[in-house]
Image 1 (cartoon, rainbow, N blue to C red):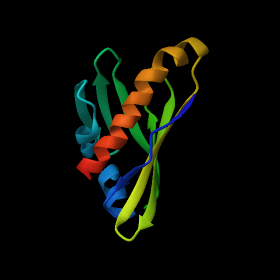
Image 2: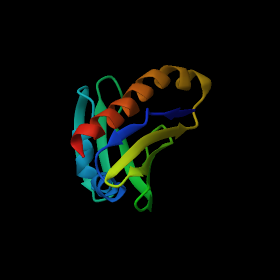
Image 3: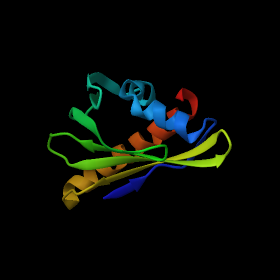
Image 4: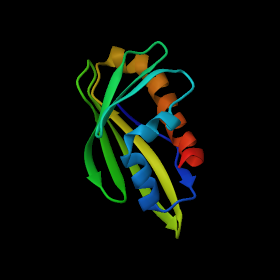
Length: 131
């Protein structure tokens, strides 16, 4: 299953956006209102839970400054990746798009597609205000 957030324009340079996303404690400001738990586990991973969903641990897997950060599930029952793509549009401005990719059985995919799509859309939208 592959999902994409809308592309959002952030009034910051790609390096500033990259630095913001590289500091995982900043993800708490991007989370939807339905968050029930957020905990930084170390400099490369954090745990979060949304209402009605299991706890998920996200870990930084790959950094390609200043244009891409790849996060992946760290343990748990579902394996997926969340990729932040950062593209400079004009000097001091960036477009950001989040890509979600996971290998799920059809029943699981049907159940989680809506909540995951809404989740990545919220992360992207909140990025405009938080960065």
